[in-house]
Amino acid sequence: MPSTDPSTRPAASGGKLHSSINITGKSRRQRSFWSRILRAAGIARLAWLTCALSIVALSSVTFTGHEADKKRFSKELDTAVTLEAKGYAKFVSLNLASVDRELKAMRLQVLDGRRLPTQAAMNSRLGELSGLVLQVAVANADGQIVDSSLTAPNPPVSIADRPHFLAFKNNPTERLFISEPVLGRVSKKPSLQLVRPMFALDGAFAGVIVASIDPELLKSYFTDMKALEDQGRVSIVGLDGVIRFDLTKRGFTTGRDVHTSPNWDQLSTLTTGLFQEDSLGDKVYRRTGFHRVEGYPLVVMVGTGLQERMAQFVARWKLIWGLTLALALVLIVVAGTIARLAKEQKRSYLLLQKNRQQELESNRTKSSFLASVSHELRTPLNSILGFSELIRDTNEDPRTSQYAGLIHKSGTQLHALVNTILDLTKIESGKMGLVLENIDMVELLSTLTSIHKVSADQKHVELSLALDGVTQGVVVSDRTKLTQVLNNVIHNAIKFTPAGVIFVVMKPAGEAGLQISVVDSGIGISAEHIGQVFDRFNTIGAHIDSGAEKGTGLGLALCRELLNLMGGTIGLVSEPDQGTTVDIFIPYNIPKEGNAR
Image (tube, rainbow, N blue to C red):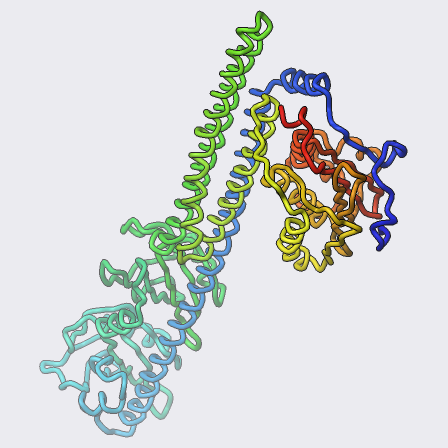
């Protein structure tokens, strides 16, 4: 780590070539060298390559977010459908148990020689389920109806041919049989038959007692429980493969055999589960959960329409993909504009070789180039930033706000990059002017340190300002550009200092001006990379596993150019894992040659 006394740190000089670099300004010949390098690389190709990579990265991030959100949505939907199936299965089990309990009690009453209670008395005994049972009837061993909770039929009615009677006549064992809905021969209404056998004292088959369940009332129960919302479907299936009850918004059906269904193996063997169900003629595709009815040979299936449930999900991602497409279009416009203007600049550059008059014309072309870039790049970017910020701050859906915030952040970074490139281009073309004023450096540094202290405190890094023998702290310079340089250097110090301290020290640099040193205890820079820190598009952070966000490699290059314009210099001393010191020299007055640029 660096010494805690900033005054003891070695100043940047050319004496240690392996670990330090002192920038005293570049000559016009050196600047021309880098201009030739950029032209050789092909600005248009670089622009299109950067655009393509940016679009791929943006699309990948959006697609990853879409898949993660889709997976979460599917998981939540499966959980909801499973719980609904379990709840309805419990509801059916409780209702059947109540009716079956009364059926057993009335069977004992009949076997004791008493008649069945009246329909009114039976409804009173059922309580909340009053009306669910249309009637209770007793048939003897020959299938003749001998008693009913309504009235004994006259002439007598036979159910000897009904499946629910034959099921016990052919196999007289104690069990509950639940038939599919049939038209009652006494009640004259469609009903589900709950049947129990009756046996004489000697164990011989003596007939059956039948409770007829009203499917219309059962429909109203499920409808009241909102089972049909979102194109829902509720089915009760017997383990024999025959549907006893099937309800959708299109109406009530029964009797369909599901033995051939691809999901029958799950329904017949598992207690609970999920499957995707194709359209049943209503053009609705459903996610269906099922659950076995405890104590009875039935399975309850609950389906929910995928289109209805996914409506909000689809709307949200249409908006996000729309924003992504808009930003991609802006990137294409940016790349196309840069490529087009680069070609125009190249043609202008060739004309400059002919005569001085063509050089003047080229300067006018550069001015037009800068104006075009400002208008054609900033205007669409500002629109994207405005709309994404509006969606981020006003949308009630937190995920939409989150993705709009990511798009706004990406657009802000692109906007800052465009501004930096424009500043460098202005300097290269000699069009960067200075607005000179008296600047109190003590006041300026105090303000900047206070602003950056918020970011430093968030990382638990101590940031402080020290004045070392400064008596004359006023310089004549450009406040905006000087602030831009100092902000960049202090921001870099915080960015690459995971923990520790940062000192901002100002002291006189002889009679010519002031020296400002930003000393940090951060990760430092290796000797093999230190000579490249002020090169354009050279991100030293890409070689360092610091966890810090990688930049564009233009910040320090712009600092060097701005200081050179104002007659100042910038130098850097660093050692890996020991920290970095950046020394900035600012003259009291800008030299005439700097001001003339």
